[in-house]
Image 1 (spheres, rainbow, N blue to C red):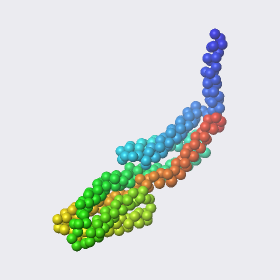
Image 2 (image 1 turned 45 degrees about the vertical axis):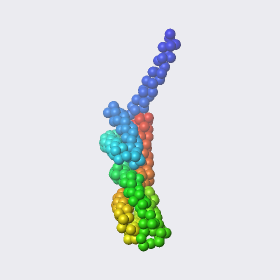
Image 3 (image 1 turned 90 degrees about the horizontal axis):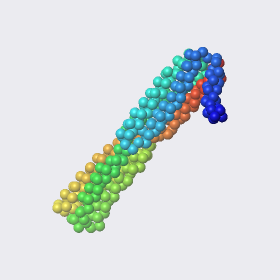
Image 4 (image 1 turned 90 degrees about the vertical axis):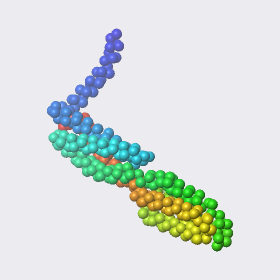
Amino acid sequence: MTGRVGRGRAPRLAAWASVALLVGTLAGCDEPALHRLMEARRLVAEMLVQFARTTNAGNRAVTAESDERSVAFAREAEQASDAVQRSADALAPLLEGLRFQEESSLLAEFQAAFARFRELDRTVLALAVENTNDEAQGLAFGAALEAADAFRDALAPVTPRDAAALPEWQAKALAASALASAREIQVLVGPHIAESEDASMEVLEQRMSAAETATRDALTTLGNVVRPAVRPQVEAATAAFTRLMEINAQIVALSRRNTDVRSMALSQNEKGVLTAECERALHALQDALDRRALAGSR
């Protein structure tokens, strides 16, 4: 019986011994100072948790598949960032009152990096919630595709034998050329949405403009040579192509804003550097406070 009681007490005695050892090492602190040190350590631990939360939520805002989720993650990131700032504001006077110069310097280092982080993060999150590249892609595979198919369907009934003033092979070539140029515009949209450089976008837009001109020239020539009964079909094809180009202009405008690509680039590059800088300062601050606790805060 005595052996069982002894074995049960052993872990508890060891735990109390650890607590006694920690309190003993802090004998150099009066009770209020000890409490302030413990509170400082708690605040730093909370800052680490909330900073990890804001970076994680910010990354998810950038990669979210819908506007709703992107907005929700951005809100979560901002709330966590506010929590970090509140803890830092509460920690500063504690460290000053304890006269912890090293820790105060580390906190100041963190706050400077964190201020830059927050400024950049607001830019990243504002870009992320716009989702202009996703919107452009949605138009490309939605309304633009429908308009292109309508153009194809309207042009299909215009056969070579409907041409009154051109040889059969020339009429056939005009219809095929108009359709091919319209398809080229569709093909160029994808690289434009994914492109991050303005100069490369400009090259793609010039190719789109050339393809548009070629399509309209082919339609104009075709409309002038077909029999009157067939002209409504060419006019329908022309209207469908005009609709396609109106949608394409919207796609290009959204793609030019490039918010998804820009937010991703900022998140992976500049924000990544600032994140690492903030984390280094926080961990250094945590280690310094831990050393104070173990050494008795002398």
